Length: 544
Image (cartoon, rainbow, N blue to C red; front, side, top):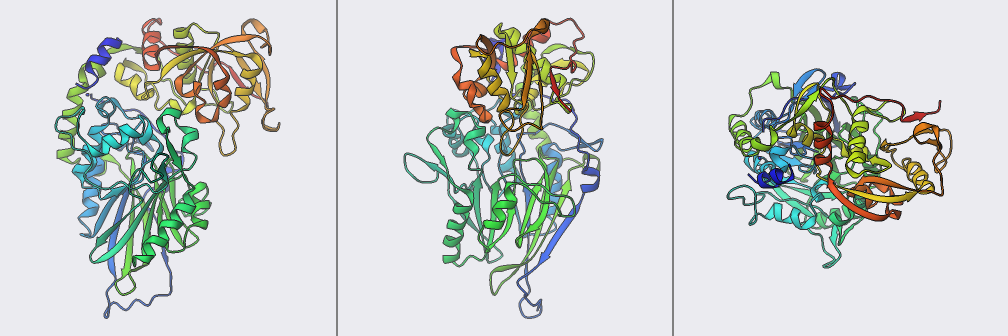
């Protein structure tokens, strides 16, 4: 199987539908929020305001040919997204297309197996004007990111020439040169008005990235960086400023209860900043915070943000701003024919590997976790990795599971969408006390990450302080974990290197590298009785 994958890696499917649910999206379709400020007088007869439209997407993750379900309606896919963006662009000749990072990474095979070059071609074909980077742009390392943007050989797609529009990132600094690896900002002149765009990414990106992928880079403070370049722009006479921030935030559809790192950033950012596009949390955000309009449009191309602004040509400042988050429902529009052709061209390249039959699922197996944090799909994947590495235990980071398994025929492509990072597996030894330490590291300052597990069970009590939430840890047949005994553990390279702030995994000894996570899952399903299934069986229990 590995030989087949390698032989076809650059040679890239018809992706199946799979579901993604949001309990509040039926309330959130086509919501808008606006603000009037600065006390400007609307004297259109003397100096008509310039009307400019900003159309933004975030966290696309190469979902060129993937349809998701939003409120039980088909949504997303690049050709439908293109049709929406073009229809909106036709309403205003002064339109800027922008993105807020994670355009690539965790991509389906149609993009990932071709080094994500098809996604860049899609953005080029759409005529995007500017964008920034997210943490997943670093999945293959900074050198590969810069190569993807600049083009040249080697490449997966014929005549690949890189991106045709600027990417800005002000706070990602090369340790070697002490300079940003990409331009920190860009001024776009629209209808004679200069608009400054500053790009930033979360300063804690190294904590959620594989260490080697961000080696040699410094991620500076977002607020300090924004304010630094806001001063630079002001000196150049720019008064309309937009920040592209791959920083999480969310709000209710009426703009209330805005929360997250992006909201803290907005309070501290220079008052000359007018609009901040957010990302990373795959959430809805449309709120005014400290006079700044904040927006984020879910993820995966299932929605986009439409920000309409008016600029006073005398002061060059934004005097009005209004935003809405628009769902990309497929039944409301015809797909863009040229993008459909692009998708089919790349699907044909990956078809030989993607359509390989692996097994048949008896029931849907989802990554949805119960109140204790356990999921049926997490159990299946953890079991496959423990079997592949012949270890006592296995651990899976929940962020590495990107989709569900539907009932019925399962192909290699289906499984790749679930595990798109192609992480190698690692066998290492940890003591019982170190395993308890790892489990307590699931509760982190800004989030909780419940690992999916195999080979043992445990209980936890959220009422206990950090570092003491794990109670009993049981092995098969009712025995308890021995804190002084060493156990063999299977993890992916991301966790083994301390990814997602699980630093205790780095204490593991006698590391042995095994197959990739996707190969382990493929082999496990093939060797399982058919049709196969997986359920939640009480491996993780929250004490009420």
